[in-house]
Image 1 (tube, one colour):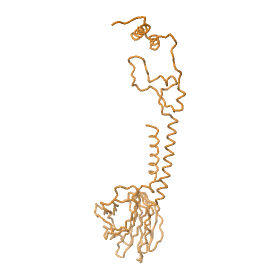
Image 2 (image 1 turned 60 degrees about the vertical axis):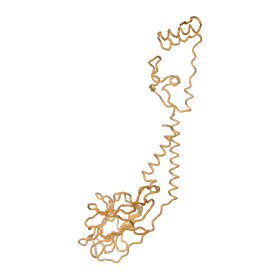
Image 3 (image 1 turned 120 degrees about the vertical axis):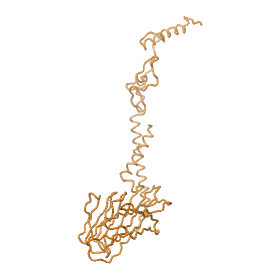
Image 4 (image 1 turned 30 degrees about the vertical axis):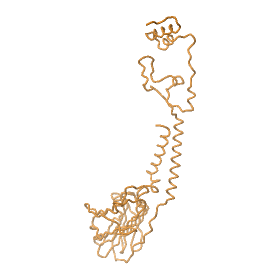
Length: 343
């Protein structure tokens, strides 16, 4: 692999690491819920009307997203009824199916893809949520596969006492703080990891007249932040690439035989003279040398002393006198016109 390829690879790995650590993702690509507001209104008949307002960020580079899925468990509160789904543009296209103990809502147009941030407002009724004067609700269920930011969850519509709130995974939930809100109680969370939820329970008292909380406008993506992070990650990638390039140059890209100048100039594996030499054999021992250090390996030119004949050099180098040596001797005689070959 060449130096340029190593530098590019290092830059890509840095950007991937930044995305994996969540440094770049919130700005340029990670799918997430940027706002989740849920209000559960307790009714006189023991039912609870749920309104969920979900601000979904599909990311900047989504290519195959058509909407979202909302899975509502069918539990002690009964099967959800009076289901309504809308967006700021109006009623949303919804496909409803029941899968075991789950009501599954497929929200979106299969013929239209979406990117960026979109708001979905989902309302439904749980007919038997209040039992024995007590209500317990998964205000944010653990079924979400994406992280959730800026959570506002509340139960309203009645005087509530003995309030308890839990957050986290189903098998290890911890208590969360609860505060009074207009018409009831609520809790907030800056962030929930995937498959983490919020459960709230309370004893229900006298009903209270309340209105649903006002909705904040949908926050658009900060385009300047995307440019800013692109510049930052680009600079980091260039720095890592440059460092990798310089390191590779320092380590060297020239493969030479291990040893000194003589070995670098002449050695190649366990080279031997004669018919058994395999020119394609790999080096027995090599090392990498930087360009600026190649001059240190330049050896002197070895010139045999005057008067040495080829056959003599052959005998010295191979330390043997054989047919090749005899052949070289005859060739030397012929070159000096001492003998003549005739066919």
